[in-house]
Length: 382
Image (cartoon, rainbow, N blue to C red; front, side, top):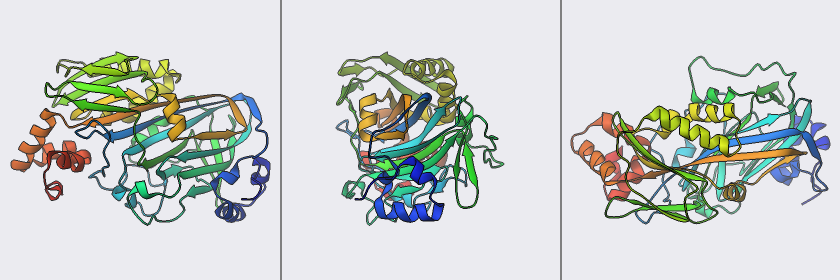
């Protein structure tokens, strides 16, 4: 590989020429190979979600969601065909990571992110490079030859930007992430300049999780840390309008959680979780934006372990580089590990036997791995 491009060199390339250069050199060529500069006035905060399904042995299993087209606005860019992502078999669905930038002065940066055993499937604003750049030969991400990567260059961070962000008429969870005090950013394309309050991306990976969660015969959940210590875990269950949860801060490497009683208050749980996110370094408005983005998905029907992902695991699976370097980088991810408990298994079996589409739709996204865990024919989920 030749000499890597500096942000200054990248800025003076036309979008078309830049695309050709990056195609030849790869996404990493956006970054500087020599000494990295630091911008003391710049801070970067990020939040996102890792969604997975626990198998009978407690480890994450490969799965595909049984759900239709993406829930994102139409202006978001996609890897390959929009429906191609649905067939990607992986252990982790990485959902709505957003990178916020804070600077009282105008600055220009480049950003590069890699994804271990994964691919980036959606992003906005326009990225100058995403690898792989064409349709995969297989939907089995374990067979990827190289890790996926994505890069943005010439990102203008400026409080002077107009803040004219794209928005469709219909409501969308995507917009909740804008409700922060982050500095607007702009990315130039051949046609115009795309503005946003953050960099957004999603992806799918075949990487392992930093924990396992296995149910015993008594219905208790045995949680084991496989990496750095977990900052906090929440065992959550919902059956209709009844909810229950157990919150455990800084659990030991091996923890046993009894099933929660379904007498909890969802608003109290939201407040507890928001506090945990702030304790990890997010600003209050960032933590609130994250909760508002995912509250209807995290706390839907079923049982799941919600946990704060160790920072070391985030940096290992999802390496991030911002150039010039900010004075602070905060990365807070929430893990969602779906559990096929006896109550879930019973509810799905009854719904299948009675052709109860209303109940099946409550589990639809996870129905494929649930049925596989139960040994039921997958065609029943169609």
